[in-house]
Image 1: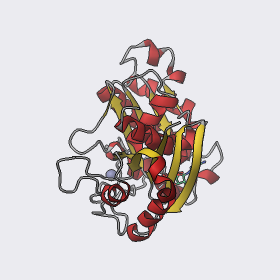
Image 2: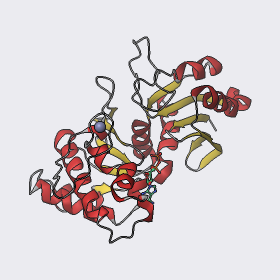
Image 3: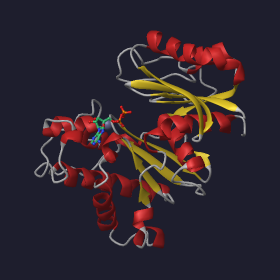
Length: 295
Ligand code: ADP
Ligand code: ZN
């Protein structure tokens, strides 16, 4: 059985995996994301003993990233606020050690690919994977292709209607204050309400407001991408009771527009959690490795 390497580079941890598919995972490890000089060598050390058995490697990383193969900074993280990581070459050091085909994309595009191959988007060619966690990001396939364009989408930073009478919270995005991520990410919930979101009860007022913001964002993506399905993942979406609230918001905001049965009649199967759960990103990186060599 062919073996592939997957690397999911997150803001707090890097997950490394060797395997073939969700049923055939050979090994996995988690490495804290400290400095690039400390973290990346540990990633290489994990794969090195088995490197000659790997056919390809897939890397899904937090960004923003340079994904233009013709650019001199291809494979680098660009202007992140994460200390020490701006300008870091992710792809180069890994490529030079392994000499293997390497797929490189955003963490959310990798997750989208994983969900298409093994999860909630099987059989679909145009859909969205959105994560709501420490940050908010969206990956998409559009007519079968991972969406890149000019660098890649930054769906977490779209403007959102913000009624300051209802919610006087300023927002936490260092660039835009009250963009989607600034209002609705895990750290935004913590800053607004003074405790981590995982500690809130189901009747906490945070959830109705969260569902409204997520609803507005999802409607914007539905209207611009016309996805066949919307997958909502990330730590905050582990609150399963958010799904019915978000579905209602989306129907209310759309107000009968996008009149297709998938949305109007079957929204429970239209806005869904990732079937791969919190493994969407790392299994997606395996899927990215496989896609890179056409497997
Ligand atoms: P990351 O984005 O760092 O990869 P997560 O997707 O787990 O990791 O997101 C972490 C954020 O999500 C934190 O702000 C945390 O408070 C929030 N979070 C994690 N688990 C839950 C939960 N079960 N319910 C609500 N919020 C959660
Ligand atoms: Zn922003």
